Amino acid sequence: MNYALIAQGSDSASVVIGGIVVALVVALLIFVYNFIIVGNPSELIVISGRQSPDGHGYRTLIGGRTLRIPVLEKVGRLSLRNMQVSLEVKAQAGGGTMIPITVTGVANVKVSSSPDLRGNAIERFLGQPSAEMQRVARETLEGGLRAVIGKMTPEEVVEDRDKFVTTVMNEVTDDFCKLGMVIDSVNIQNVHDEEQYLESIARKASAEVRASARQYEAQQKSQADIKEAEADANARKAQAERDADAKTAEAIGRQKAEQARLAADKAIAESNNALRIRKAELAREAELKEAETQQAAAKAEEARLFATEVKKAIADKDVALAEAEGAAASILEEGKARAAAIACIGEAIQKHPDALKVMLTEMVPGVVQEITKTIANIDLGNVTVIDGGQGHAIAGAAMGRARMLTESLATLESVLGIDLKELTRSIASNITNGHGGDDGRSTVAPNVPSPSNA
Image (cartoon, rainbow, N blue to C red):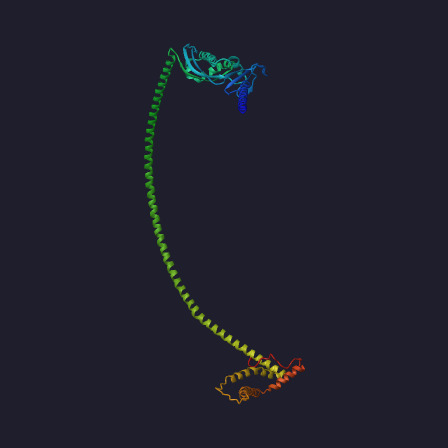
């Protein structure tokens, strides 16, 4: 039960708070509405009730926003939009005609936004309906129309409406400045009169226009006829001149053609004559060239024979001579080399008598090798050695070949006349004692060429 009362009390407090918030918002809106003034660009806001800095008892605002003090300041509004005013004026035209004419039209007027003029509109039309401003503007414009119509003839009003409108606006500009208003435009829609003066003028003007048109057409036709006649005459004259020129040109052409034909015949004759002369010259040149060609062919054949036969014989002779000289030089050089070698051997033998023996000794290995080959090549056939058990038979067979070699060496010593053992001991003794020839070297000449090499 206590919880329900608490909840009910909470709801009541929420409602009270919500009401207070709503009241505050409404009060704020009322404050804003009463204290803040927001203006539109198409209206003049007048805030009166306090002295302004320029000495007036009001201040103005076009667009934007401002603050005002309620009760102490009052807000008024004037529209700056265009107002269309219908015009219809009946007045007597001037210029001595005194003809009554009726002019209808439409004007667009508005309250001036200029700081210098809007004070006049505030003084006269603040708080007044727009119909009152339209009435005042209409009466002012109609008065200006009457004044201008009284100064102009009906013809001037009808023929030059731009001048008429300009004159009307100049006439009423000062009056509209006093009202704090301006004229945007004035459009004259119709001008007429009850006595049909303007219609007669229009008919007269139309007749004059038609007469002028007919006169103009006649003048144009006359001028066209004259121009056509002149054109025909000029055409005939031009045709005659063209015919004469054509005949003259034809005669000149025939004359030039005849001259050209004669010149062509002359040129052809001269060309034929020159052609015959040229043919004769070419024939003579051909004969000369043929003779020169035959002569050149004979010289070429002679040169060919000389080149092929004579030169070949000369070349063969030169080759044979070169080969003979080469062979002779080779034989001569070989003989000189052999003679020099033999002379060297002789000088060496004279200086060193043992040199010959040494040379012959150097030949021994070759000879022994050949003898050995000879022994080796001896085929004894199938020899059966029978030994009694002491090995003498086998040793005797082996020593048989040694005895053959010893006998071969003895034969060689007898042929050469050299004691190989004595020669060997002599050389060894010379080497051991250091005895040599006259220059202190060994009497053996190891590099003496052998007779076989010589």
